[in-house]
Figure 1 (spheres, helix red, strand yellow):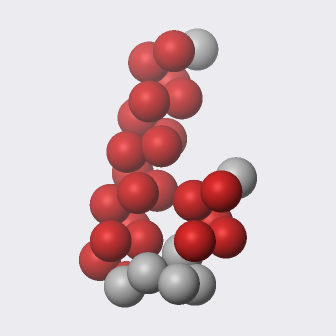
Figure 2 (cartoon, rainbow, N blue to C red; figure 1 turned 120 degrees about the vertical axis):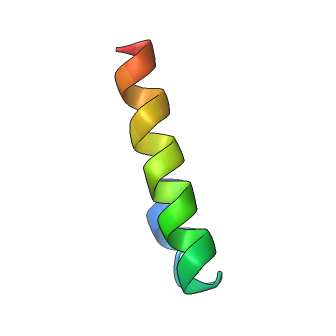
Length: 30
């Protein structure tokens, strides 16, 4: 959830990278 909040403070590409990494990590741990 923190990723979406920081999304406003970071660049677009960094934002997309964080989202993809978070989703991948969530699926792997789930």
